[in-house]
Image (cartoon, rainbow, N blue to C red; front, top):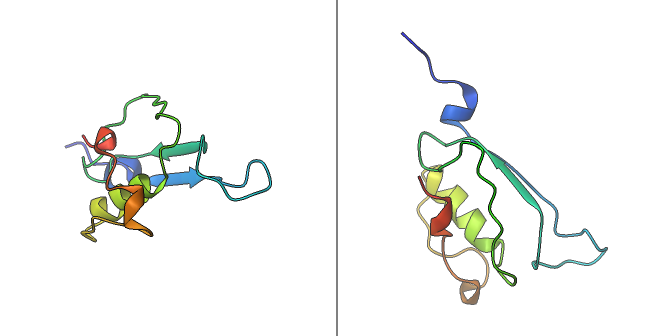
Amino acid sequence: MKTAGLLDRGVFLAMNNMRTGIHEFDNVPAIMAGTAGGYFKTGGRSLKLPSGTANNGILIALANALGVPTTTFGHAAYGGELAVLRG
């Protein structure tokens, strides 16, 4: 019987919105690994999100994947979950 590994059950997210020395959300580099039990589609994908995409959508997806249902994070004008991350 094959057991699930850590990245099959969990998720790792690394982001930095201070790459130029000021807080910003445009073109923020992010690395996400793991499927959170199949919630996220991974497998070597690389996504380039449209310019101006707020990182709030990533954080909403992360909360939902971990069992904390939410539709907003921070200011609601930044939108909801990034559906492109889902499996």
